[in-house]
Image (cartoon, rainbow, N blue to C red):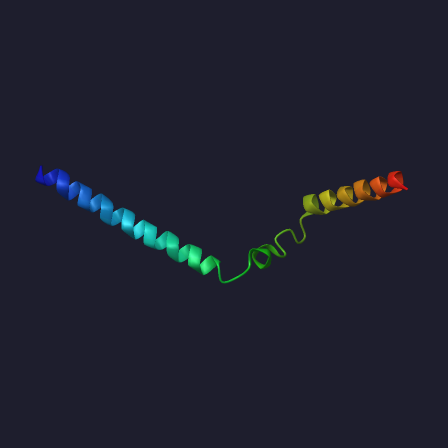
Amino acid sequence: MASKVQELETRVARLERELRDVKAQIKAGEQVPWYEQIVGVFKGDADYAEITRLGRAIRRADRRRSR
């Protein structure tokens, strides 16, 4: 029985440390707005440039059709 209690105490202590770490990460992440964290992520990415080009083409075509 004592070993079960010790095992549970160990597990709870580990969970408390992990929870403390997660809370610290969340708090640190809140200091910078999310949109500032992702600015420049796709810079120089050829696939993203192609997606952007195709998106512009679709929007341009939609505008022409709506006139």
